[in-house]
Structures are given as structure tokens and as C-alpha cells.
Image (tube, rainbow, N blue to C red):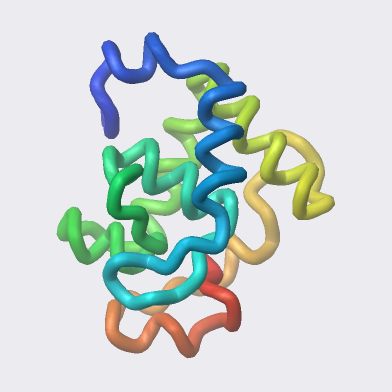
Length: 126
């Protein structure tokens, strides 16, 4: 599944993505006002929601997808694009997680009800 266009991906660099992550980390989800972490911002960018970032449950609602399946699809997509993978690993290092893995917070069960996902984990977990 292609989330952003190949043209957009071709012109992205890990450095530009990391600058986006630094700039947008902590912004509030457009859908639920939960503060976003670096990984959520990267997933929002990958789905074309850079200008209106959303947490994974709100992204899933906007795209009419299951949150856990969307999270897993995005993780696979990100792992296969070098610039996104480098930005993901940078976010992992910030959170003191090993490179190339999905952080523990991302593995937590995602509530499929967008209105109630805020209670799933403090701080806007995936």
C-alpha cells in the first residue's frame, strides 16, 4: 500500500523528516487533541497528514481503517523506505528503543473507538 506518492517520497530525506519530527512532536492531534509523539508524527506524514497530524486511532478513523492494522501497515511501509526508516530509528533512539523495532508503546492494544482512545494510554500512545 502506498501512503504518500512516490514523487513525494523521492524528494524526502531522513534529515527533512527528522526536522519535521522535531518541529511537530507534541502538537495536538487534530481529531482528539492528544499530544503526538515522534512515531505518530512520522505515521501522519507518511499518510499525507503532515499539515493536520493525527494520532493513529484518528488517522484510522479518517482513513476508515482498523487502527492496529493501519499501525502495522505503516510500520512495514516505513521500514521499506530508507529515509523513513532512518527517521523511525532516530525516534527510537530518542525514546531509548533499539533501531528497527516498533516501540513497546506502539504495541499496546489500540482501541478501535476513536472517541475513547485517549483513555488507552496517557500521552497519546499509538
